[in-house]
Image 1 (cartoon, rainbow, N blue to C red):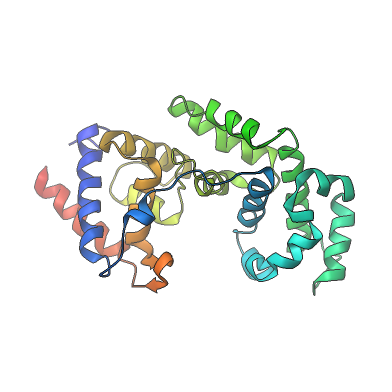
Image 2: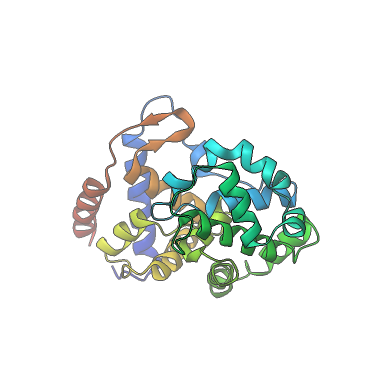
Length: 262
């Protein structure tokens, strides 16, 4: 089987789906992990989701600690209202407010992670200010859902418009808002898809091939993404259960299955 045809992609996903069911801890409803829907009702919620997503890179999660500081950030950032934030702050004044409110080291360094995060927040608000309300934002996103190429273009656009977001985090932002057409090509998916010969280890190529696989097996890209992610990570976060990740074992046994099938 060719690594580009529908049969091959469907075969791998069917194997992955069965594999996940076999390793899943008992009494866990996988449908809660594999399905998602849009849940935001305001621009504030969209803005907050962006603010949660932006520090998920490099060492930033341990420095920003968004969840731990959520209440204080909510207070400083006007319930995450992008227009109010822009009317009260620019990057310099917001960083000054953060320095007053949190213990921040090396504040004069241009590489300071709080300074990088501050620039991202202002950039995010500037982007979101283009939309009158959540309905206008939703209509904008849906414009890109028509075909494979336009779906690939949207994360690129967001990565260009919002400082520090990047392609992979842009995908994650869309995915977590409930746009199930947009998978996140994280390190687990990159490893699986490249090791199984589906595509190269380039995140853009992996992203496109997750979408191709979703179309081949008639599932959402979110469903496909989460299936492989759960296998690789073992993180059943909705149930507060962590089991060992099975990425290497899955890749090995899937390769053997593919060889046998071929």
